[in-house]
Image (cartoon, rainbow, N blue to C red; front, top):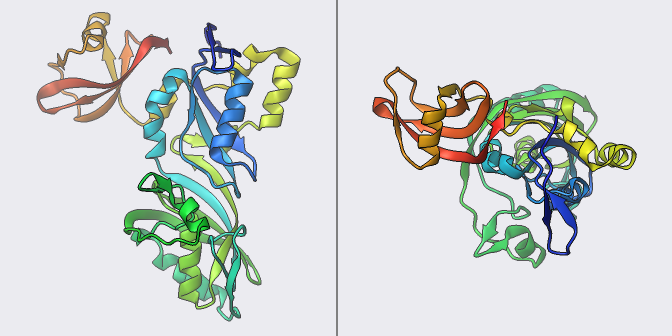
Length: 316
C-alpha cells in the first residue's frame, strides 16, 4: 500500500512523516500498550499514532495501531467487540487477578468439568462487572492501578457488559483454556475471578491472547521483529505495505455515495438533505466511488450531519 511521504519534525528534531493507515500489531508479553505504541511509532517515523484499546502487559495479541487520519476513527475500534483466548488457574487467587499479582489465598479444586461448563454458562449474556483496582481507569486523574500499588482501594461502580460467548476449550487438572467473545470494557481477569468464586476455589488468569478486535483478525498481525527486519532491509517506506486503509476501521457501516459538490458542502460544515431513502444511523462517506471522506450520521428526514471527516480525501 502506497502512502504519500511528507517530512515534519518531532520534539527531538528526529525526522518523522505523515503516515496514514492502521497496523495490526502483535503485542508481545511484558510491554504495556503505550510502550508498544511508542516503539511502533518510532519504527514507522510517524508524526501521529494511537492504539485502540489497552492490553495488560501480561497479554499478547492483536493491538490495532492507527496512524495519521486513521486516529480519527479509533473510537469505533475502542467501542467494538473483542475475542480472546484465556488461560486460567483454579485454586489460587492473586491481588491483581492475574499471574503478576501476589497470592492471597489457595484452596483445593474439587469441581468437575461439567460444573465448570455450567458456571461458564451463567456468565454468558448481559452481566454487571465491577472494574478491578488494577486497571487503567482513573479516579481523580490517577489510574486505579497506581492507587492499588499504594495499598488503596477505591469504590468502583459496576458496569453492564455483554459476554456473547464463553466456552471451555480444554481442562488439564487446575488449568483451563477458555474462548471468550465480549463487548467493550469487559475485564477478562474479572471473568476468571468470578468463575473461581462460583466454583468455591478461587482462580486467576495466567495468560491472555486477543484474537480479534472489531473487524480485524489476529491472522493478519505483524510482530515488531518482523517489521524491524523489513525496515533494515528495505527502508522505512517499505513498512507502509502492511497498513490497512483508515476506512477499514468503520467497515461495518453502510456506504453513502456523494458527489464532489456534496462532499465540498460537508467539508464546509454544512448539512445535506437527501431525497433518496437512506436508513438512519452512521454511514461511511464515499466520494464518486473513488475517495473516502469520513463518517456521518443520517438523521430523520434524510438530513446528513458530518461527524468525523478526513483532512484530505483518501483514495479507495
